[in-house]
Image (tube, rainbow, N blue to C red; front, side, top):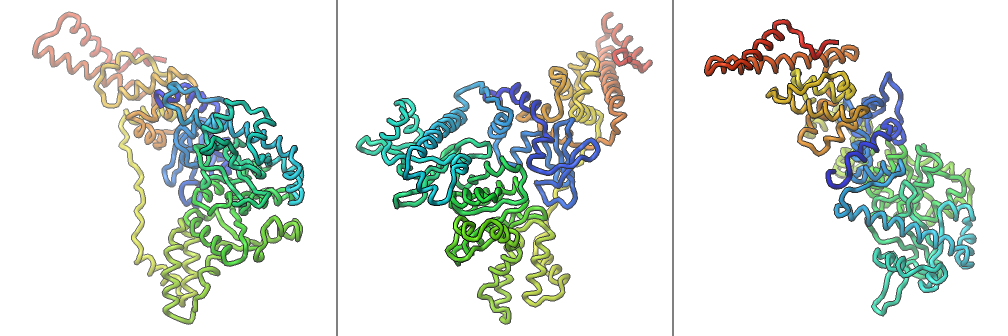
Length: 584
């Protein structure tokens, strides 16, 4: 990111980051020899093929060829862009990003300003709730205790902004910032007001605990009953999960996450020690929600009202989730009695009975067929065909072979095809065969092996002799090798992950990435000797190039005394096959 984020800072971030620890907070890694392994998160992996190397600070999947350093993992796993991944690492390590050019990072600075303003306003809302009897009485009436008020940072916004600003001595500068960022508003007559005026405030936090938005609940029958902050550069309803930060503080990898609809539902269930409850902010579930939730758990349980509207909402969620379901990632549903919500029902029946509902949640496959079979007459051949036409396209969106085949077989029996093999054969004939990516085969030239060795083992640079005499050689790839060698010498403790980061936006990054994961078939104990042998051979080849040039010149023009002496020395070195530079 030349001109934006200094390379030295990126290198510093990577040197502070242990890729094993970073990935292990998101996936369960197991030690396997020198490496760590798990099933790949980027493709349907039946056996662990995703490998993380601590020494190289690099990951690689033998199944789908996914690979990279800590930054690449965040980009691909958490769907971040480059700058967002750097920001993520900077937050983890508690160091700000020192942009080189302030004109290039207006968005970043705007986001930092928003975070600061949201945090300031959140604290004022929190202070204010303890000064407003009506607000606290409402919460206590809803059964929310003081501990939950503190954990979820619940606050209150006064009906009149001028009362609020006077109460907390909000100066003109802060007020103008709040107006500029549209956190508060001003009407045509110049009257300033908080869009959440007269509402209980539920601060919305990101996974790091930063305040990114607010939700407001009316307590005086003002409509709408619930109101959210408008979308900003730090807040998108379709990508945000309420309560996830609180869950993560208790357990970074919960067994499952229970998704409910409202703020109060999350808070009440947490108060009853259901410590894995989150909400999608009252909006329809999105694919981004599902991907985010699956980053923290293998099982998502959605809780809906059992009426028709609730069942329809559950079905829409299921359709969005099908492409993300795998042998590891699964979905379940709880359908509550009509007109009941989690907040009310847990108070009515208690924690243990509510936990039983969770333990007996409806599986994805059961709900799928229960919903899709509604109003289908299986004694009618036409309706069987309609069922097949509706169900098959949905089943085929599932990437897991195991789950997809299981659901197909269940469907086959329902429509009267009892021979599972016959049905699968029929489907196979109807589908376009999936094309698989061919493994990239690299021709093992000496130069490619040499570059691969130093990319995979940057410490080899320390044993390389001075190579200035090679700088004018025309051997293909040599200049690339010499540049990488110099980078490794300039950064003696550099690892593979950091080295690749130096060349992220260069013309050679693709070949370097390819060679970084290439199996050159050289055993570890022989790498040192092979590296020196290859250098020796390249040095000899350079001498041979010079020798050929001088011989050709001698035939055409003749040589001066200096050149005659040079060719004599070259002949001597080549005949002896000993290069002084490489003597141990």
